Amino acid sequence: MSAAVSNGATATDTRPHVVVVGAGFAGISAVRSLRKAPVRVTLIDRHSYSTFQPLLYQVATGALNPGDITYGARSFVSNVERKGSTWVTFRKGVVTEIDPDAKVLTLDVGPQLSYDYLILANGVTTNYFGVPGARENAYPIYTRAEALAVRDRMMGYLDHISATGETDGASVVVVGGGATGVEMAGTLAELRNSMLPSRYPELDPDHVKVVLLEMTDKVLGPFDAKLRRYAANQLRERGVELRLGTAVSEVRPDRVVLKSGEEIPAQMTIWATGVAAHDTVKKWGLTQGRGGRIVVDSQLRVPEHPDVFVAGDIGVIDENPLPQLAQPAIQTGAQAAKNLVALLEGRPLEPFRYFDKGTMATIGRRAAVAEIAHGPKLTGTLAWLAWMFVHVFALLGNRNRIMVSLALTFRYIGQRRSQLVVGD
Image (cartoon, rainbow, N blue to C red; front, side, top):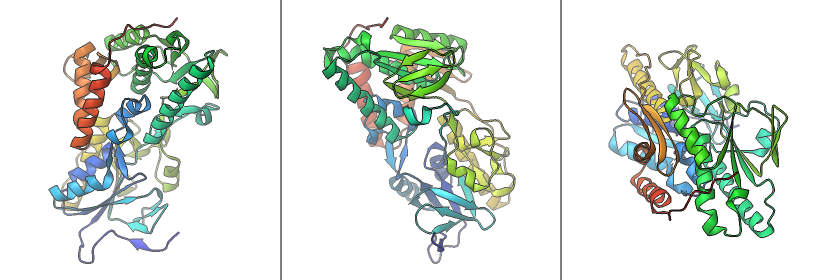
């Protein structure tokens, strides 16, 4: 480990140094909110790009290219610096240790980095809940690399069974009935129904099954009951085998074992349930709560270290976690930055109050659910169009917005209409 310490400053710049860890929704929001503050900012991320996670499943199913939903971190900080008055830079790396007393970060590469104020917004990762074989055999879709691994495995297996005719047990099992699981299962089933007849005419779509497992008695648990029923019906209409009240006890390379003892053949198991803090967070010496997330007070500060703020999924406010959605991350990132500036200026800090704008999920072409806060509960085409607009608008960069708009239009509107083929 290098003994050198960098403060990210020029020789004459003595403004307080703010380090933001994580270039996800929360970190990006925090940096944007600091663009006119009297500080210097360093953004750190393990990747050189920011990933728009809500559309990773579209990469996994081949609708989008990975470059369509990623945006260069250096391009982002350059744009922020150009539009504001704050000096902003980017450093690629993983924070391995934090010394909050000395106010120094240790990264996996390069010199240590000193700070005056710290915003931790590094997000979370997949939680396998200790299920045997899940980490080794299941495919998560939480990063760009994981989404590409799902796509490669799925396409490779279709080519394999097309060549060999070995369709026994040709199933994709999706574990988790939240938004990610529902969107993944619905898209896979729709692709099975529309793509296989034209691209793999030698395969019977009925032989390629999509199974969705959810341990509770409903999908999309946080949604209104009407929207949950609609989503479940749409999944079944697309041929998804929906198994509610079903818990997984083990994941093997070629099957999923249920708590009941039943075994479901699975040529690919997609893990779309649960999040936890990265293992490196344990080394930071900060109080952790549910899922290893960092416990903060209502002002988004670590109680024992008031110059350390936490935003996004990695934080849990007084042991009450917020939903793992884009809006809570964006809002906590902005509030952490505002409270940091208030601290600098000697003003009172404000407690974080989440403004729920609603949530939405898509099942497939012209089928989605949208629950607008203090507004209507939408299903079908209107909800689907709202989902398209919100997700395209939220992307970073005009190029990405254009490319995603074109790709999703082609997938959902321009594709040849075909009769749904529902499996047994």
